[in-house]
Image (cartoon, rainbow, N blue to C red; front, side, top):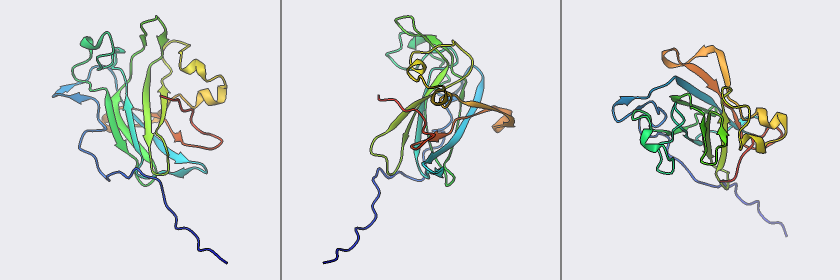
Length: 195
């Protein structure tokens, strides 16, 4: 007896094609401009075989240019930049590309005194993923060591956590562009962390 082939199904969630205006611009909050150096953070989200993932959701959350999170758990949250929201969301296009306008994050020390390198936390949701993927993109300026970065011992994998400054490209209004590509699985997979 021969059985018919099961139909192809993907795992949700399924996302809208558009978000509200401004979700990917963290530099203007409550009618105020964010302080510190403004940058463009861009990249592509791909799966194994370098195939772009269309319509993935990329969320970022980060401290402001002074290393302060707009969150009540940050002991310095009252010092947060009033023009910087600290959270954004973008959708990848047909080529898997995403883009954010944000500020270069500041370094800071945790309550136990550990130094944190300038970084942006990043989360990806996409069709076919059974759980969200969480990673961190680091920027070159800051302490030589970071508690999260130190968890990744392999130098090749560690290098995949750093944004690359694209010296040849300027974003909107001549802003510096940093590129951070995300590989969801395979040999060149981006290191992901449990949250």
